[in-house]
Image (tube, rainbow, N blue to C red):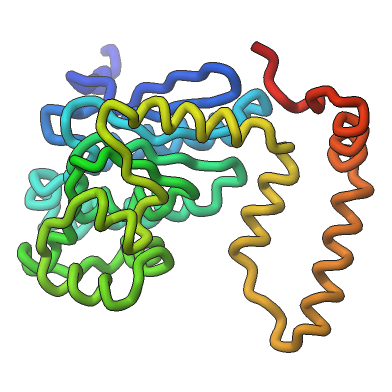
Length: 266
């Protein structure tokens, strides 16, 4: 007897588009507002790993179809999983860690509302650009739960006073406030969003792959207690990068007034 074939989802859940060194991972489950289901997150992790492994991919963009960026955890799946206690929010931690630790720059493109777990995705990105008409809310307390897992990324971005207010009230806030409190890097007019993301990616691909990965590590390192020790470590790090193959190529390209070899060709 033939083995039963797994049921394919009605939608692809994640779509991947790669062009000019930029891979866009598109949340593509608009019928449930791109909720974070286990199938969607499983596919997302696989596609992100593939982008990281591909040397031609220089930047990862996180985008979405439909009017909603991400509504948070899939509550239908959550309710069905109470008996097993394997609720989908457990996998969200893996997704946030994979985004945060991605050695390539991650840019979030947010054209519409984001709620709860969706804000964790935005905070995990290195750069987040939203439409100023997008709205946000930490709705967890209104569901009787807490924004625990997403705090791993969100609390590293938000101003403490804003985090306290918005976590406790669950109130909706707009793109301009999201920019002011550090959730996003920039809020732009909706009709300027794609141009802003494109310009950001064009700037990022001009950075050397190894230098970009090293800079991400630098941004997240904990400084040494004594500044003398810190300076000594950082002096060695700078020297190593200047003497690396990328460093030599970058200096040569600058002196020769040409693009370095790592800049994608049109």
